[in-house]
Length: 146
Image 1 (cartoon, one colour):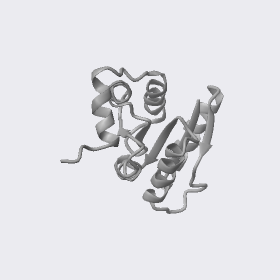
Image 2: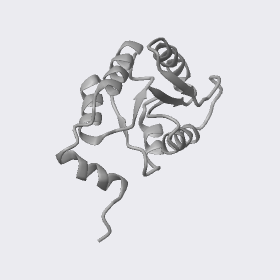
Image 3: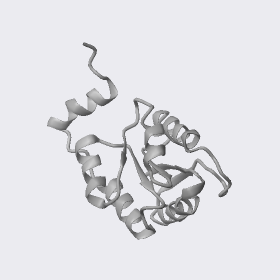
């Protein structure tokens, strides 16, 4: 699977660990930055990941910052992307099954590497349930105009 991954400086180390692990699993990983622990602004990297996904350059995305909150907000500014902030595998599973999330966000200051791997593994392996969820997901991309 083609996966885009981006972070801020606070999650730089977690990003590197996850990218390496994903490549070992056979995935094609695009590391969208940053390339060091020097202070950066998480919205810049969230927008970059969202553009990467919206352009079809990756099937899934992983966004990381200190809490996961800020970068998830940035990623979700793009209407083609549905990024769910997750902290354990059940939320990652439901994000895929019910919301057809194409990105997840994790907080490096809140989530250790083992839990992060469990979330990512569940996110990548869970299919979208479709059916009754489809019309709801379509409304996330195309809000009804009243």
